[in-house]
Image (cartoon, rainbow, N blue to C red; front, side, top):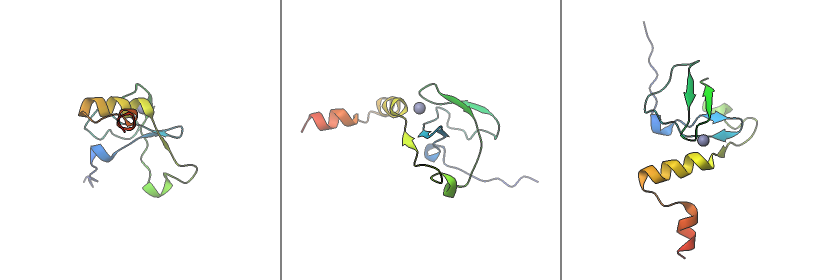
Length: 85
Ligand SMILES: [Zn+2]
C-alpha cells in the first residue's frame, strides 16, 4: 500500500548549497530524481523535515529564480518598487 503525503508545489522551495530556489514543474518530484530550478541550477531531490531547514544556516533566496518567477507572474521586482518612491 502507498501512504501518500501531499505537498503544495508552490510552497516547495528546494535548497541547494544554502540558497532556496523555485521549481518550474508543478509536480512534486520523486526522491532521488534530478530536478532543474527556474534559474537552471539542478540537484537530486532529498526530502527532509522542515525543522532541519535552518539547522546549519538560514537559506538565502536565489535572486535569478525570484526575478524569473516575478516576471512570469507579473509581480514587480523589488528594485522597481523602491525606485517609484
Ligand atoms: Zn535558483
